[in-house]
Amino acid sequence: MKVKIFFTAILLSGLVFSSGCGKIKSLLDVKFDANYTVNLNMSVPAASSTLKSVQSSFEGSATVDPTSNSDVSKYLNLIKSWTVNSITGTFNNVTKEAVLQNGTLTFTSDAGTASWTFTNVQIKNGGTITIDNTSGQLDELSKILSAKKVFTVSFTGTTDKDDFTFTLSLEINSTVVANPLGSK
Picture (cartoon, rainbow, N blue to C red):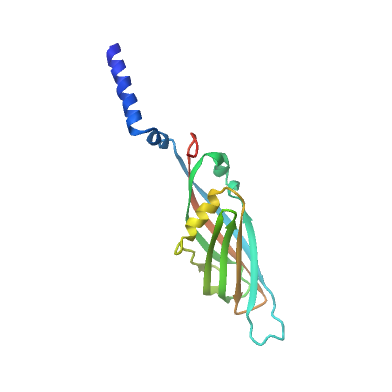
């Protein structure tokens, strides 16, 4: 009986070491969603009466603290990876419909920059902007979030109308993998 237990222990030890500690460690991975909402409140000022053609500009920004998510805060020093899956941009609280002639949405931190440009987008309540990964921007934003430091989101542009306000609401959807044994 002791011999069977001894050989079973040796067999199990061999399986653990032959499959690698990394595979065993990965069994303890914790995967969770870390989603953030950013509301950028914009004000397009009234154009000067001396301007013959209306092209009004706006700019606004907000900061995001990735550690504000309770799960991120809980596993902060144990995070192995952070992936941004998608960003959805929706216009809300629009006081006058207009066309975004040119716009730039930028996420910046010490860890990098992710930027998108937009042209001829309708600004109306419920209208959306397409935020894709054409140039690897979501990958850059993943790096920014992985730095676990406050970052800035800014939106600037010009419209075909003046004297109105709107909000660009951004939903950042990301997935985090952490491990109680450490981030490596």
